[in-house]
Image (cartoon, rainbow, N blue to C red; front, side):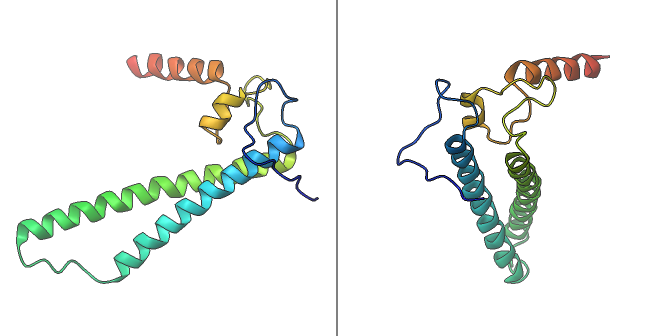
Length: 139
């Protein structure tokens, strides 16, 4: 399956046919770029962690460096989960379900997908989901 060429400066709009080949290619490239950025950052972290332990002589400096390292590892863990969501979005692009709400089957707005390309729920379904979570937490 060959990918359609993406016109320069193309931005998907609500006026065109939803998930036409050009729009799908736009989101595919956007997801692949995001994934590549996250992987590059992850590799930088791995390289810096492999450069050795914390060699700070001062205990306060060492504690600060440990805190920075723990924060970095937490961030990378979040990014690993994000990469998994990006991979799922790429799979949905391949099977034709990308861009449609998992709950209602309705198209997710192009603006929402452009802002959050891994979205699986329409804005309305997401808000409903968050309200349900809040009310269950309040119990």
